[in-house]
Image 1: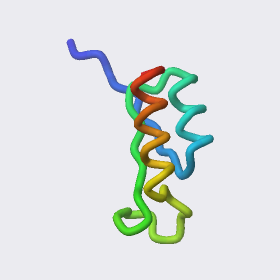
Image 2 (image 1 turned 90 degrees about the vertical axis):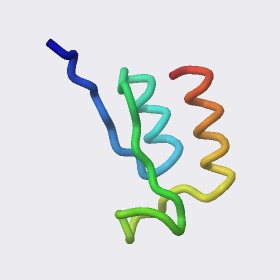
Image 3 (image 1 turned 180 degrees about the vertical axis):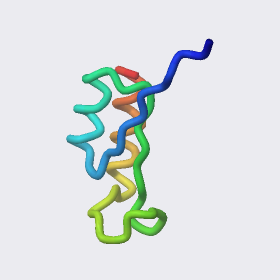
Image 4 (image 1 turned 90 degrees about the horizontal axis):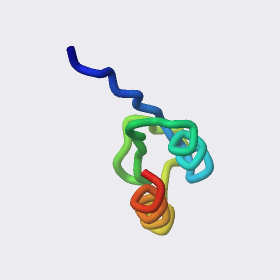
Length: 59
């Protein structure tokens, strides 16, 4: 039997960090120009870079 994966949404860097620290197996995010969440703030290029670095350290 496969173990379920906990996937969490993150609309900003703080929510991404919270999800990872709370034990999410994966986090899905959207960029400024590429996202299904049109009205969300989403991540700019610098926030994407910070998110990747954070996940590599803690994920």
